[in-house]
Image 1 (cartoon, helix red, strand yellow):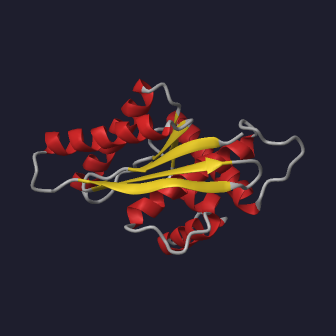
Image 2 (spheres, rainbow, N blue to C red):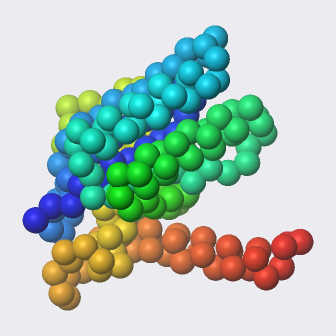
Length: 199
């Protein structure tokens, strides 16, 4: 039995979309990968509609068991982070309408899951995506590889917490252990900020 995950790397000009099937253990298989593009000169409403249509089409065509979206954080470029957050919201709404569970993953969680280090460079993550999926080359543009990294992260999270067809007593890989540690640290930090907002 396999578990299919759609990874969404949100972006207004380029929105990465990647689907993988996760089997038992570390088994991963590429299903499809691509990028939804919009032109900066087009009206914002039309760009958002185009991306929403594309995400919904991917969900309808490939029928994922879960959708993994990158969690958006504030950046120096307010315009960029606003567009990214809007697209992330579109992905969550599309998944919700299709009754597909949604998960948010931070960049550090993705890096830890794929490479074993939460401080890995983007190039390292993309190369590991290529290796894990046994691809002849890294998917381009980078948004496509990032979407696959999100899908892999969610697949390995499911195995790490034992929620999806994990054989009893099986061992976690170093990358899975690193992901679990990053997730625990993120949750602890979140609880601290909730209790002490000024910190």
